[in-house]
Image 1 (cartoon, one colour):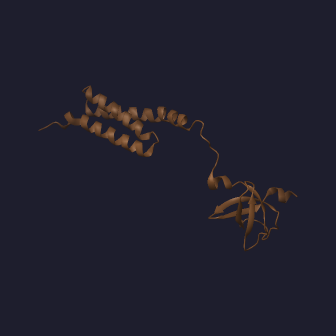
Image 2: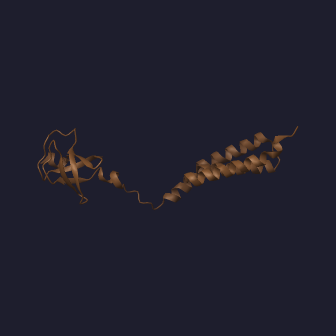
Image 3: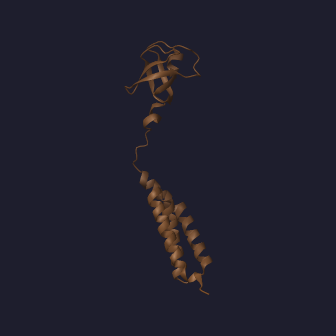
Length: 157
């Protein structure tokens, strides 16, 4: 009978290859750390250690790399990144001025970034109609419609 533990090094190489391929797809350094741990398991195999020690070495090395090296790599990767909100997220806190009266049929709002959007009044607003020129704040974006509510500055006046 053939002892399959003699060929365990092939399994370690397959694991390393699979984890590196998954890492190339995900690009988040998780599977790279697991592949490096598997490399430790391969090293333990080449030293002639038993299979259960190889598994322990691979597991401990993977966990250690995941909690030590991976956060440093992610921090280095995002260093200097522009973290300002973009697209719809950037519109959610913008203020604007109503270009037309805002009622049941909706209206138009000119946002502080210069864009003009169709607008609908937020359901939580106390009023049903707002006059043109009223300051509003965007609370949500639904498709191509900005859901707005009267600004706090209007209530204070």
